[in-house]
Length: 292
Image 1 (spheres, rainbow, N blue to C red):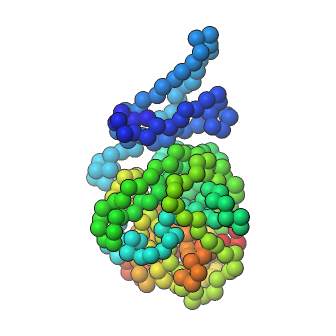
Image 2: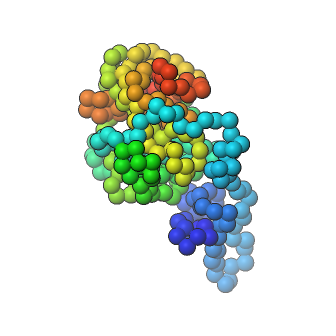
Image 3: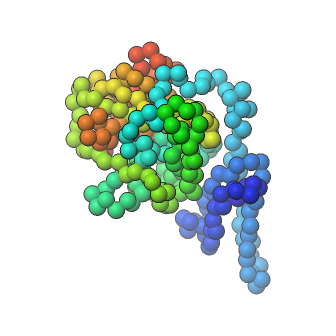
């Protein structure tokens, strides 16, 4: 836990840790001090544990001063201005892959509707079990009201997920979180039916690649339609090309879901967008849920 009195406590971890391997990452703590408590029986003489790697996150101001990346585009739309229940299915995820990175993920419902914590994101975000074990989720990372610019009380979940399925050419990663999401989250519906050009769609995503709690990273909504159903970019093949008529997508938005405007079903995962991000005729490439 951190030095602050209200710091989140991660643990206790026992034996060889949550993965049974003796190796794992703890959760991220705020501040410049991490406190670790270690308890052992008096008759135990063996070494308890070793800290052999630490990941540091720069303070937001220092990071922005040293970064050439712009702030969030001014054409982005605050998701709090819309009534989509799927807003509460979306998490900003933080993970470690030789450094800290950010993406977006979406909770998925299953046929049993038993709230198993399945999370869908992109393969270029989480592509191995080692990375999945470090995934932390920030829920309800939204504003208090439409265009208020003030974050509501978000929830930081402990790290850890099992990577159930992933594929580079379809750029998806299907995870099961080790910790149940907090009360009030929503489990999104989905369809495996391939969508046609002209289908009206929207996206819910967390733009801006800065580490929480960056206020600018709150949930945004983009809307438009599918323009092309055989689109390729980077490692993605045979995806959807979406043209936005409102909003855009940016770094940090990767892994977010594409929803049909009619029915609000997930049909894709954000793989790529224009570089640098733009508000001028913006578009994005999404993998197809139908191909997963």
